[in-house]
Structure formats: C-alpha cells, structure tokens
Length: 501
Image (cartoon, rainbow, N blue to C red):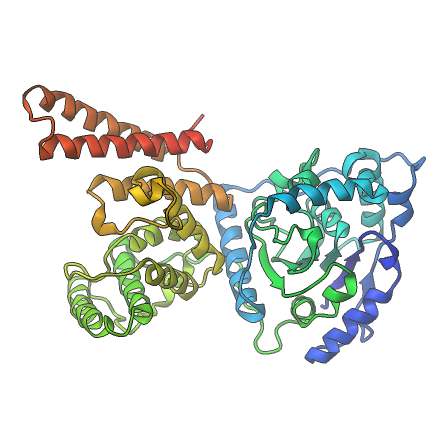
C-alpha cells in the first residue's frame, strides 16, 4: 500500500499546490513514479489560521504516543538506528553543522517579527487551531509520509506525538527547518518528547541548506538525536530549492515506493546477539585495528599490519573465532544498537589494538578508524562523531595536558599510552554518560557511584601512606594523580547535570 504524502507548508504564498508539481518532476527525474500516478497527496491549508486571530477555540490536541517498556524502547531505538544508517548510505553522510551564536540568536527573533510565525510560536490558541486543522485533513488510518518546509517543520514536530493511533509514518522529511533553534522551542513540549524515537515513525530526515539562514546554518539533530541531518550545499530557503533537489526527492521516493536499488529491510524486533563480551571485544579490536591500518601513513603500515597479523592469530586461537577476515564480518555484530555498542566502542577507541606490540597511532588515524568501525557495524556515521567528541571532552576534563589548558591545539582525546591505570576507566565512564545524554539514551546511575567509590578508596590509600612516604615519591605522585582524575570526573558529571537524583 503506497503511503499518503502529507505536505505542511511554511509562511508565504507556498500554500498553493506548486509544491506537488516540483516534487513530482524531481521524482520522475530520479526514476520514481510521479505524484500524479495514483499517489494520494494532502496539503492542509492554514495560512489564515496563522495570519489572523480566530474565533475558533480548540484545546491543544493531546499527545497519543504510547508509553513503552524498557525492552520496547531498546527494540525501537535499534530499528530506527538501522533504518537511519540504511538511509544515510543511500542519500549521503550525516552533517549536523556547527552552532553559530549570532545566527542562532537572530533567526528566532526575526521569525517572531513575522506575524504568522509569532502567533504559532507564542499563542497557544493559534497553535491548537493549526494542529486541529491539520489533523482534520489527515486520513484516519494507514501509512503516511510527512514532508514539511520551514515553519511547517515546527508544526510537524508538534504533530508527530498527536497522530491518531491508526496512522504509521513511513518517513518524516523536514527541509529548511528552524526547529533546532532555542528561541523556536520556548513554551513548547516538543523538545523533551522528541529526544527519543517514536514508535509510529520509521525514520526522520532533516535537510538544511548551506545558504539558508532560517536553519541557523545547521541541522536539528543536536536537539532531536535520532534525526539524520544532511546538508544541501548552497541551498537557500525558498521551497523550490529544496523540493526540486535530488536529495529530497530521493528521500520522498524511498518513503513512498522503496529503494530504487534494494528494498529497505529492517527487522521488526531486535535479534539477540549470540556472542559473549570477550568474543565481541576481540572482533571489535580486530576490526578497529584493520581500519587504523587503512588510515596510517604508508611508512607505518607494514610494521603495523605485521603486528595485526600476530594479534589476529593469538585472538583466534584464544577465543576460537570463526571469522578472522580483514575486517572480520560476523553478522551477529550487526545486532548492536547505539546503547549496547557504546561501552565496547569507547573501550576499543582508547586501546592500542595491536598490544602488546607498540604502535604510534595519530589522533587523525584513530578518529577515521572509529568512524569506519561505527559504519561497519551498521550504525549511523554521526554516532562516531559523537563518540569522538565525548571522548575528547572527557579526556580534556579528566587528564588535560598543558596544551589543553592553554588551548594551543584543537581538543582531542589524550593518547592511551600517556594515561595511568585509573584515567582511561574514568574517561570512558564519563564519555559514556555524555554520549547517553547527547543521544537521548538512559543514564547509568552506577557510573557516579563507581567513580565516588574509587575516589574514596584512593583517598584512603593516600591517607594511610602519606605519614611515612616521600611526598614527591612515585607512589604518592601516582595516588595524587589518580585522585585528581577521579575528582575531575565526578565534577564533570556534576557540572553537566548528570548526577543521579
């Protein structure tokens, strides 16, 4: 059954049906059927509702998204992560953009000068009336594809949690969206409820233009972590610049008709990985080492590959690995979700993958190898950037170098060989909490307790040895360093609001 295509317009004259002609032509150019070949289209009209005060009085439609159990949430995240990774491989690499303070502050202020935007963002009656008008135009049941431009994307965000129970969303495509800007969210509940995937939504793609100031020149995944952001280079804000692009047409066509190459296939439930932790770690280490070798300078590669071959033989013999290819490709690792892969990936990224053989691995090689490893296990590439960012943040906070303190270089994780035994664990635990917060995953309350317990143990040992030890001796210096690292780790969690309540 072909889904119904729903288009939510923004401000201005684009509430006519020109969008359908543009979208149909772009689909035909890619080889998909057009929108006039048996595809139901619906474009609710609400310009007057936004422009003028209304005598209509509606309550804000209630949220209809069901509450999920922990197991159901895990399965939902896994399905959406796999669908998003598949979409990224088909359409382009996740590009979230960077925060630009002047633009981020100016755009919401300018939008609120425009009467239609101001009424929707600030007046609850206008918001309620608009959502009622849109809901009244939707089919009662069946699959839909939601396409929204500009202010329509903010309306779409409010709509997603209020859809009738019989509607399934095959895909959400927002273009030219200001929904990630702070001022646009004031007084709305959309930020909290959309930090996690919704059970009725298969995936969400946001396309932002490289020359579109309304977007703040960035995507929206910093607010809604499960969204795939892709930049349209040079794209400006008018609707025709987005809907006429091959990128948006490819996403709409995929949601309506499936992939031109192969059908999008995401299992309905989360398979259980039949692999223990030691075997999982061994496979990840070997795959990470393979990708590191790919990104090392050519002069280093022969020695590193020789060490990798020796380590592969040792691990294969020790754990009885059944796949020792380059990289190993056990299908069972494709069942990892962001949550279950988090700690193993952080652990691998902080190790020397060919230990006990020494290897000088630069920061750029580590970063590129982590990206390849994340994509290899079937997760969205943006997750690798999140992991690298939180590792750098935790490393600089817990074990800063003098260059970090003076901001003499870009922030990056400290090389593992320069850390003592306590620092890597503290960095990994704090980085995991930062990543969970960034990705909308459940926090682990055991992290803060484990760090606090380790700190008390170190302080007790230091107090016991201090009276009869040389203050500048190696033992006391090591204990002082470890105590500082754990204190900084706890302070980082406290400062970022990740302390258990």
